[in-house]
Image 1 (cartoon, rainbow, N blue to C red):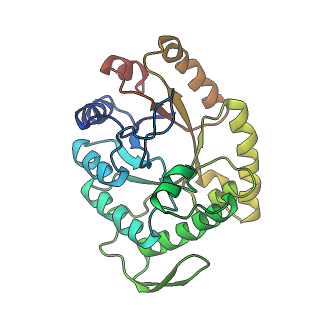
Image 2 (cartoon, rainbow, N blue to C red; image 1 turned 180 degrees about the vertical axis):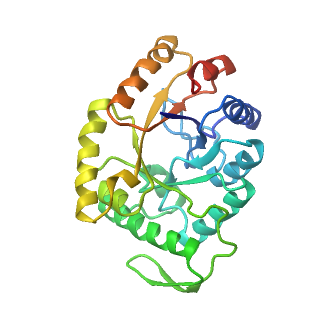
Length: 276
């Protein structure tokens, strides 16, 4: 099973850089951040928790690491026009030498939208935006020019040059909504990430995803299955229990686990959880 490491960009840059370098050096498959403008409520943290922007931070991660895949798990579809986001992603793919994994989701954090004047439509509308954005972005990466008349966006002979370094940038869609989100996963994703899913949760949702794949005539084996685990590195009991939890997920069919740390772990903790 693949193992990756994630930390939110809510710490001093020096701590983030140390984490990225350590995870890269220890052989983690990928290193990830998240896409929020405010620190989230974790153990009573305020919204005002200093937060570095995800994609500019990701550019720094591309230069600090040398082997690991990198990505944002996941980008909120409501925050940026998909044509702009497609070109941002290509830039990071080039800077990293073709190591980008492109994470995208429907966004969920309402305060970020309301305080910044960003519309926060219903969940169903946001998932429809995700569906349309995936189509636009993939076309911009692969076609000479794109004309698109959609529900949310219109493009007229839009260009995206240069093209990605990778022949196919993997699209990673995060979410676990069984009816709408997993249908978008079936249509567009190279990897599906289920946040905070247990082995039982994963098994139930994976069966629904397979049904959606059948509906859209997609081989479910084309979609890598991943789960995100949220960890407090200071909680030694939780850290000690992770190998057993990961083994259970592997037995359930999960192919990739992303260990998401709520605070920067020591190198020793990272080493203990690194791929064997």
